[in-house]
Length: 272
Image 1 (spheres, rainbow, N blue to C red):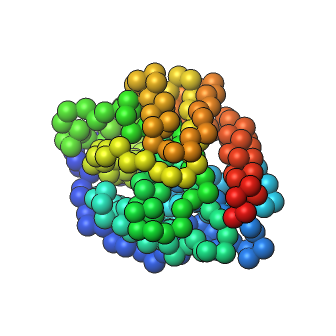
Image 2 (cartoon, rainbow, N blue to C red):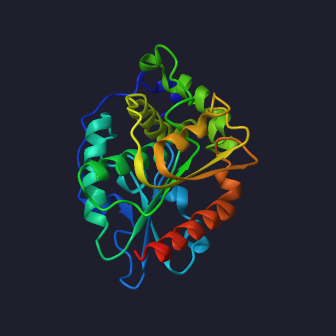
Image 3 (cartoon, rainbow, N blue to C red):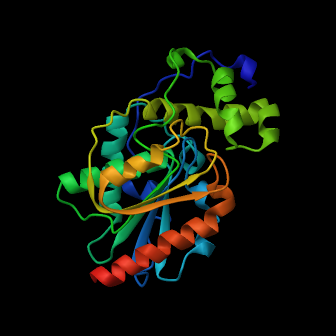
């Protein structure tokens, strides 16, 4: 199907919950791995966004990456349409994945950061195990990109025009209508989920560290990431790298090195 044959508006479908094992890949970690790291990807992506990160991890940290419905290995499932329902499902999936025997951390990029933040808030509210560390990358609850008026009526092509300059996809994809029909619907669905988010200025008790590129066009307020100092009682600072919204593609080793160094130190110091 070409983009000219696509409907003007991406169809809305009802969400379907999946068993917890379908949310994170791999579904389990070896018992001898002492620290769990849950990775939350950017809009439209899934576990594949972190496929190269495993070789960058220290031996004591094992990663499990999130894939939401409607993409990659879950392509047969309907795309999510409701933020509250998605967060409920994801919360249950996290509870089914973590265990009391070992500490865990969460790192999220863009909408993945939004999910990790709200999961930490929810876990605290429900009295569940808190993350040992949160990593917020390229998203802030204040000073971030605001959806344009009338975004509900944008066509696939118009959505593509909004995302094209961010560097999420290789240039050749934008000239391949069939590939666009495959990859754009999850991006659009996640965008529509993200615009439903309403900030309540919640503060998390767990340690939090933030990262961003120095020329990220979605951080419309130059000091947007500074808000994290207000959102964690144990804020560990902000780190800036050269690049735009997807700076982390080039600086994954540096970001992950900093994050896991902090994580392992917290686990050791706190005796977790």
